[in-house]
Length: 248
Image (cartoon, rainbow, N blue to C red; front, side, top):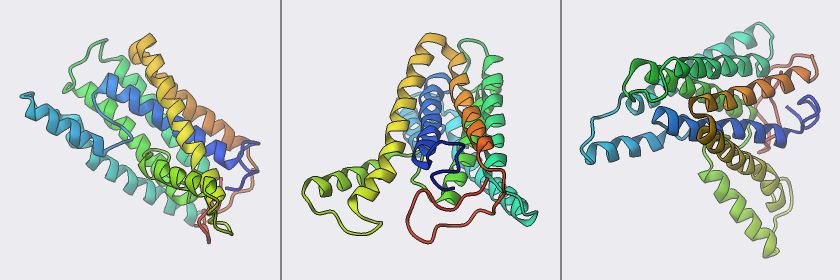
């Protein structure tokens, strides 16, 4: 996907929108479902800490990584199927993400205001959120953009790039410090905004806050549908760039 093919929204801003989805879902998922839906390794920390403090082992953190892996595998199969038919993948994958996030919201609403973390409905809602992030991770990996769900590497790249710029050590070429900064700051900012928005909505509306990531995903789908209607196959970028190679 190039800068001018996101329905009038530049690729960095589109990546920021995806990051906002992940950030809002991660915060709301932790508050309402008891697990990280995007930052999966955080679930291992939560699980061990809970057990060490004498609590019962929670099922959702145990299932998160296997469900995420299965979601990636199924998404890969879907991508290969779409490619074999000569179809693009951006809109179908965004549609799947919207459906999964809408399902997460619907299931959580049926669980009551204070559900048991080990209740089937709570676990199912959490796994739908995890699966949605699996689809988004696959989409971003095919796109070649920086991660929109885990910020550690992005913050590292951005900090080092800013340091190089301030110290006058910018490299020439596409992999220079300014280029790296342009690639990473939108996803970091988007994730932070999403976290803040998710936390505010969770404090104000409780379980209904899960409508926020679903609505943002629907917005992303709308942006994708506004783009050029010519379908192209996903191609991996020939150079490290977050704006190369994904079709609609």
